Amino acid sequence: MDAGEILDELSREVRELSLGCTGEVARIEGPPDPLRFLREFVLPNRPCIITNAIDHWAALRLWSNSYLCAQLADYSVSCHFTPDGRADAVVEAAVESDLLGLGYENGDGGQEGGGIAEGDARGLVFASALVEVLPFPEALNHVLRSSRECSVAYLQQQNNCFPLEFSALSDDADGDIGWASQALGCKPEAVNLWIGTQDSVTSFHKDHYENLYAVVSGEKHFTLLPPTDVHRMYVKKYPIAHYERTDSGSLVLKHDDPTSWVPWVSVDPSLKDSDLQTAKSQYPRYFEGPPAFECSLRAGELLYLPSLWFHHVRQTPDTEGRTIALNYWYDMQFDMKYAYFNLVESLTASSSVSETISKHSNS
Ligand SMILES: O=C(O)CCC(=O)C(=O)O
Image (tube, rainbow, N blue to C red):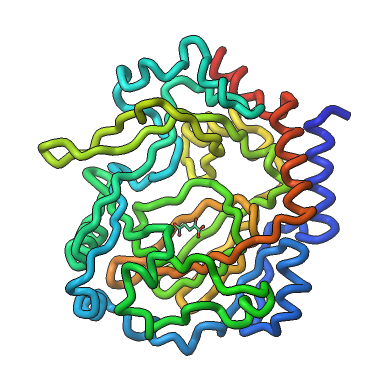
């Protein structure tokens, strides 16, 4: 057996023993008993959707656009801008000259590699959004007017922004998820608010947190893969770039100076048509392997997204044109599960498991 077959066997076994093979995410009526939540979901690192757990939040009834603008009239909030709704994502650098000096030619981007293969499909960069701090009503207006033809705004900041930037809303939703805090033995390290439209998509990534993700309005669509599937994600190192605003107000992509590199998932599960066909040939382990865990969350539902799970997130707006969510990040335990994950990640990086992309992009 080569490394790829061994890792395939691992991901199959985890499904057979614990996660299930259908790609369905368990649904439970909440709020659950903390011990049950710990035993059935946190310890086995298994996601679930919890219904009827946040019905008491005033946010579910109050958070119209006009209410939010009235409550937050004098607040400034962080708004993330991209031309196409893809922030912290691997994108093609629009300007060829932007790539000069990034080390593609001689491959020196591999210097800080830590064993992870270089993102060798030339012209691809990891693009981060332009973040502007704006009065809330103006920021919301940008979100609602988003379009992939000009600019997409996503109101989010993963720095505990709910209490920090939106404190006027703190009575409308809980500061922590009580039964989860009990099960996990701590309060959340960060509570983040997300207001976006269908144009904002969050690319595949994983976090070192136990995540309780609550939808307040609209719908969120998650594509999830367990940590044991890391060998199917084609993690490569990409040069980091960021969007800047020009004098005319449009967004341009600039590479970071000095150049730095970030390991990121190459697979985009939301591609269509010919792009999807190309991706299928580049990333066969993802597209030919067991199905991802797919779920959609409606307003009032909560997802337990376990630590280290890869997640890709899309959204459908409500009748007011936005999707609103709050997520609670709890510290994960850096225990044996974490050590095993590191082992699987190292095995993936040190073998030829993720090499298909190189063969295709070089051919
Ligand atoms: O809602 C989103 O767009 C992304 C959420 C996410 O990545 C997270 O909660 O970790």
